[in-house]
Image (cartoon, rainbow, N blue to C red; front, side, top):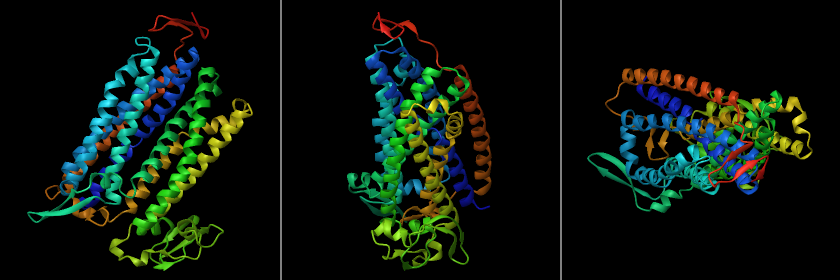
Length: 458
C-alpha cells in the first residue's frame, strides 16, 4: 500500500470516529435548552431531574469530542504538510474565529453547566446552557466554513513562492460565504439536531419499556421527538439545496451520486442500484419518473445534466462508493422523517407509550442518524476526489514529502488501538450513566433559597 492510501485511510478513520461526538453534543445541547426552559418557566422538579441527567451525558459526549478531535490537527502537520502550507492562510482565519467565538464561549460556561446545579440561580444556569450550546454551534460554523472552502473555493488568489503555490485570502467574507457554506452548514446542523434528539428518544424509550424513570423519560421523549421531526424536515429541504449547489459547482460529484455517465443528457434517479464502472452504467431500480434528476436540478425532466464522460477518467471520483453512500444516506433520511412523524402523531394521540414494538424500534433508531452523518460525509468528501481543494490541489499532491508508508502504518495502528480503547471507555461510562438514570430531585433547596416540593415552590 502506498503512502497516499494509508494517509487517507488514517484521516478517514480518525475523523469518522471523532464525528460521532460533535453532532451528539450539538443536538443534546438543543434538547437541554428546551427542557431547562420548561423547568425555568414551571419550576417543575421533573424537568429539572431530566435536565440534570442529560447534562451529565452531555459532559461525557463533549469530553470525547474534544479528546478525539485533537489528533486530526497533528495529522495535518505530519501527513499533509503540503496541503497545510497551501491552505494555511485561508484556514487560519476560520480556525482562529472558532477559538475566539466557540472555544472560549464553551469553556467559559461549561463549568457552570456541569457543576452549577443547585449552586447558582436557575436563570444563570440556563444562560450557561444556552451559551455552551451556542458555542457548539459556532464551532460547527467555522469548521464547515473551512471545509466548504475546500469544496467550492472563493475569495482567494494563488501565490507562487519558492516553486510552491499557496492560497491567500483577498476577500474574507467571500471565503466565509463561499457557494456551499450555507447549504452545508444548515444540512450538517439539522443532522446534528437529529443525532442528539434520537439519543434522548432511544434512552427514554428504553426507560419506558423497563418501567424505570418513566416520567422523566416521557418528558424527554416529548421534547426530543418534536426536535427530531423539525430537524428531519429541515434536513430534507437543506439536502435539496445542497444538491442544487453540487450540480452547479461540482458536476462530477452529482454525476457520481446517480451514476450518470452520459456526457450531456437528461438524467434519471435511482432508488437503489449497483454501478458497473467498467460498462459505465447503473443496474438498479429507477424512480418511476424518467429524468427525475433533471427535474429536481433544472425543473425540467428533458434538460441535460453533465455526466461523468465529460471528465477525464483521472478527474472522476470513485463512483461506486459515492453512489452507495449517497443512496443509503437518503434512505436513512427518509426513514428518520417517517419515524419522527409517526412518533409525534402517536404522541398526539396518546398511544405512543403503550406501543412496545414502536418503542423498541425507537431504542434501535439511535444508530440511524449517526450512520446518515457518516454516509453524508463519505458522499461529500469522496465525491470531490481526486481533489483535496476542488480544482486547485489534488489529494496526492497534498501529502508530506518526508513521511513514508511505514511511518504512517505505525501511527495508523496506534491510533486505531487508542480509539478502540476510547470507544470501550465511552460505551462503559454511557452505559453506567444510563443504568443509574436520573437522580430524584423531588425536594431540594435551590441556589435562590427556594425549596421545591412536589412541583410547588415553598
